[in-house]
Image (cartoon, rainbow, N blue to C red; front, top):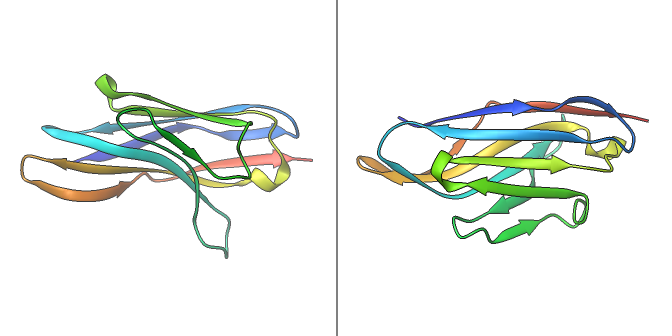
Length: 120
């Protein structure tokens, strides 16, 4: 079984910075594309940023130039550095990983979510 464990986030003022981390744990698996998504209550979950095993990245237009996603394949960990935060970045942020391995069909796994709140 694979689990995604997230950390980081919290409360910050407008223009501040926060960091999120996510680690996939388990045995005998490969994490393909990993990424961050966010959701505001009552709205659909939306893509923030993704990164492939080969470090190809993709960002939502709303976060380009402010957020940076990074990855450590050896540790099955991704991070999201969030700078110049705005109140509209306030949401619950979820880690997602596409996982496959011995006895594990290719499946998307989600973390439990971390609250990010930006005050104006």
